[in-house]
Amino acid sequence: MFFQALILSAALVASPPPSLGNLQLESAQSRVNANPSDAAAHYDLCRAFYDLEDWDAAITQCEQAVKHDPRATYEDMLGRVYGAKAEQSSWYQAVGYAKRTRAAFEAAVAADPKNVAARRDLADYYNEAPAMLGGGKDKALQQAAALDKISPSGAAYIRARVAETTGDKMKAEQLFKDSVKLSGADSAAALSELASFYRREQRYDDMQATIDRLAADPRPGVALYDGAAMLIRAGRNLPGAIKMLDRYIGFGGTDEEPIYRALYQLGLAYQKSGDNANAQAKWKKSTDIADFAPAKKALKDLVR
Image 1: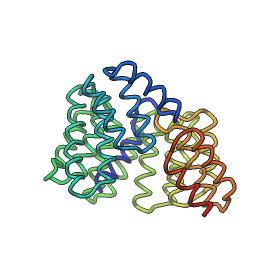
Image 2: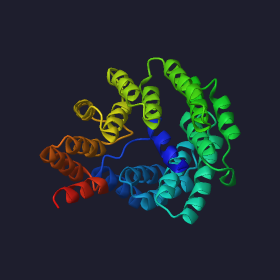
Image 3: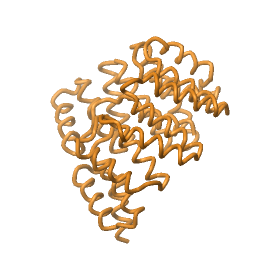
Image 4: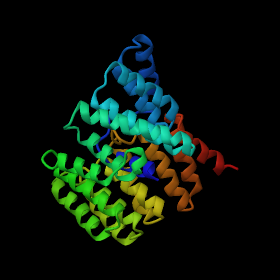
C-alpha cells in the first residue's frame, strides 16, 4: 500500500526530463551504445523505460546512471523505479525493493540536502512504510522540518500526509490548503494534491471543485493531466476531463507526463463516455508514438 502512495506522490512533484516515446528511447540507446559510461544517457534511457512502465529495464539503466554519477536526481529516480517495481512484486520481493527504495531516496537527500523532490519522496516512504522497513512518522516529520525554509509548501504537504495517515483528516485538509497558499503563483501542483486528498476521502464534489480551480490556472503544467486523470478515475465530469487533456496535449504536454500517456487517458475518458470510436483513435495514436503497454492492451480489449 505504501508503494502506491509513494508513486502517487512522486507523480505530483517536479520530475526529470520526459520520455517522448520511441524516438527518445532510440536516441538515448544510441548515446549509451556510443559511450557506456555516459550517466546522463543511462538516466534518459531509464526515464524512457519508466514512462513506458518497463520497470526492469528502467532499473538497469538507473543503476548504471547512479554508478557513473551518484547525483541526487539520479538517485531519486532510482528510488521511484524501485518503488514502482515493488508494486508489481510478490511480498517477499517487495520487501527487498522497499529497502532499495529507501536507500536510494536517502542517498539522494545526502547528495543534495536542498533537493525538494528527494526530501518529499523520502518523507512519503517514511510515512507509508512499516517500522520493520525503516519507516516512521517521526522520520517523515524530520524531512518536513528540513524543508521549512527551503520549501514551506513542501513541508506543509509532508505534514498533511502524516496527519492523513494517522487519521486526523481535518488537520490534513487544512495542511493541504496551507500548501496551496504557500505555493503562491505556482499552486497548481498543490491544488492537485488537495484534489487527490478529496478523492481518497471520496469527497468527489470537493475534488471536482478543486480540479476546476487548477484547470483555471493559465499555466497548470502537469497538474492539468493529473486533474483530468482523477476525474476519469472517479467517472466525474468526463467532458471536462476531455477538454483538459485536449488542452494539455495542445500545448505539448510536460516533462512529467509524455503525450502518449495523455492520449491513453483521453482514450479512457472517451470509453467511459461510451464513444469507443474516439477511444480507439486516441489509443492508436498513443501506440504510434510509443510502445506503451496499457494503450496496446486497451486497444486489444476493445476489439475483442
